[in-house]
Image 1 (cartoon, rainbow, N blue to C red):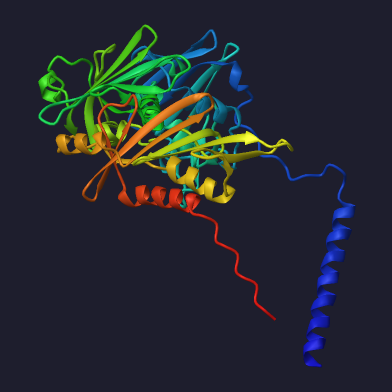
Image 2 (cartoon, rainbow, N blue to C red):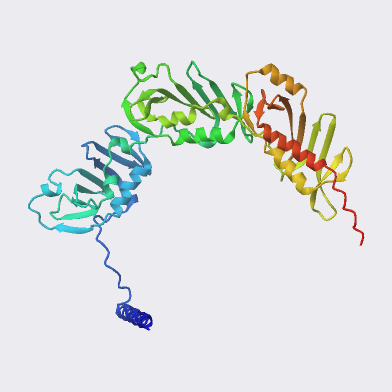
Length: 458
């Protein structure tokens, strides 16, 4: 009984609260919303044509917009990081006064405004405005600020410190290489001796990437595209010197890695030198004299073994687009083709050595096992043993899909299985268990159907 009374009391309180909220809201005038915080400036971002920024470090930057494009004009003329500049203009436009601290302060020093840490100014429609930013509040959630021609001190949101406290380096375009990605048709990666490699990849219109050096082979398209994307997004960490007058000092006389990107007739080259402090490496771009640093992870992402850039899929067909499959094992050859039955449904049939229907689920398993075969390495040692195994193959597979043909032969040497794909240089080693699964799937497909059990006599 006591529990019921408690529940009833809570219900009455809850209904009373709902009634109060309803009554209060119904009496509020239409359109009555919390008062908006006052804006510091009344300016539209696209009207701003000049910016000036003094960072906490004391470094000053001046930027100017011409024909819709921003340029850093002081301390030197440079292209800008558009996202950084956009952040400043957008935040100036939307800058709000969180709270007025003092209308007529006697001492600016206590707010860090006697000598402001940060200054941001803009010019728009012939009008110039500046914002002075001092220290942070005790909680760090807001910043003290004022305008040069007004006495009052007010608070702005603390996150704006990161938007306005920008050095010339922060504001400049820090892209390591600039190229049009959709025009890239060649990539070269040259690593220094003693374990150096020279890799070159090429792409013809309408075709996939291929490796042309050190071997002529299919390239791993995601791996090559990954390098291109990494180079396009790479950013400088710092600028070390305005020019490379002493290349040996940075290891640029004998670079550890040289990457060249070809885009139509243009060539863009990045040279990587020795390691620098803070997990960085020294670098230089061929079209500019300055020496800068980039994150060491850029080199780690690019300087990979040749095998990492080779396509490891032995077959390009997949079970859904295969049209014909031919397998030769010893003296036996089986040919399977996909066709449409009288009802228009696609199905697989064996056409050789005899014509017959096949179990669709077993055929799908065989197709999947074959199409999923991948190289685990491309060995160069024991070339004679590999060659001998492939001259007397244990299995040959030919597939047709989307009007294309591909053929792979498999040889076995002891516990190792090797594969040679037509048109590819060298041989690949594959997982023995994966190859044995293919043979098992073929045996299962060819196994005679079990005889029906004899009927039991009553």
